[in-house]
Length: 497
Image 1 (cartoon, rainbow, N blue to C red):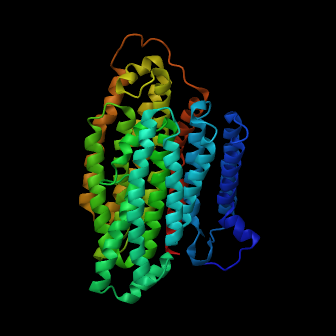
Image 2 (spheres, rainbow, N blue to C red):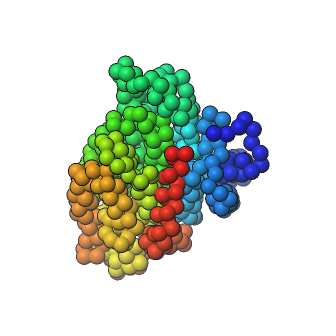
């Protein structure tokens, strides 16, 4: 896994993106206490993200080798690199969304970089201590980001609710992780796997390990907003500043799935029969609750919150399907099949969901509200914005050949290959249910009328740029599907090495 010292090449491969984000974030936060002009800090944050992304690209271009700190504290493999790109891409688009928004203050870009650092640490952690550190760094910065609008009661409420739910989930997860340390005496994930294998998984060991799995899933389920750990999500999405909401809908979710994939596949292969059942059950409940509750929502941010919950349910199918067939006998699927499907879905979800929240921000700027009635006749006031929203919502439904269709196709195919036909069928039915609330928004935008709708709706330059980026990304995933799918498959395979 790695030696006790790092040479220059190891450092560039392993720690350069994280180091650049750390330096950039601390520079912004320290200078922000001296110079209050927030206009200087967002370009600086952009430079930090670009530099981190460039270092990831350089390490991707070198080789497929894996570098690591001792005890798996941080691993730089293809799987880590994939989530480094996801984290940097999410932060970059959110930063563009937030251009010109003085109300967010000059600390916003620094906190955003720290939250992105948390995502990268989560993705590269193969050690219980580093998993906890990464999740806590992401969580604490997310709490602060949610409450950035200090004079807005809803923002304060969102931050408090997020903090109290998060603190409880974190404590439960830490308690669950301690079970595996007690059972195996190891904190690194391969060491835990070896310890469980040596134990022979006797009845006494299983009586400790299975509660540990359940308790750990409380914290990880909180990060991905899986039911029943989702209660924070609608209120926080509605109360937080919209650029922050956009980040929370993608960034922590990606980090949670990165930790889950590495933790279950590397540390707990001996318990695969048990965690497959747990993940499949969570997937069904999450999909159904998210889609059914979304039907009654009349505010866009809450509607997209429940949509995001449902999307987490689809993604859980990928993890449930990966090892299920191998666990049940028969020929195992190609290594990384379910996880590769999850990774493809995450790329599609990144661009699609951030694009939808960009439209929400544009309408909120014009109408001062995220109520569904604010979208009445949007096609006549801002036809390109309305068209983009239709494009994003068709993608979220999974209409071919749009981006999320590819993700759902691979997710459901993985379930079928794993002989989880019932799980794939429930996913398809839930996708059909989602048509109702997505097309409710389309009907309001295109067919409903209100007074004064003829006036053109202004769109800020930053939002125009973010819409262009997300629309191009959603379309680009379809056009360049083959290399992206191959990249996802290679990244997923690294979990076995």
